[in-house]
Image (cartoon, rainbow, N blue to C red; front, side):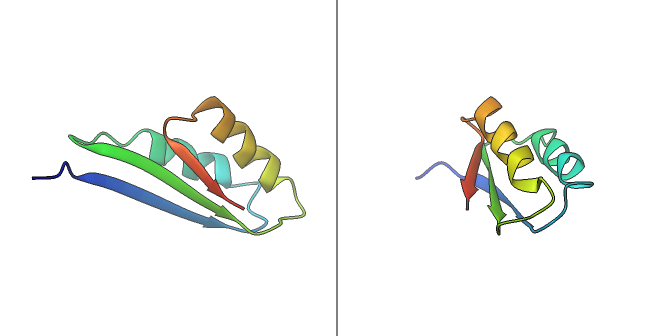
Length: 67
């Protein structure tokens, strides 16, 4: 039997004011199986991309970016 895993998907565009709270909430989730966070960022103009890139750099084992 294969191990289960959970994927949290965050889709964002120009959400600089809110994206950190969303990512922190996803990081705080506790699961009995693997957990990854996929963040889709669509060329924001308000600094959102820089925020998600910073989080991905700090949590490379959990966060994967879809730019």
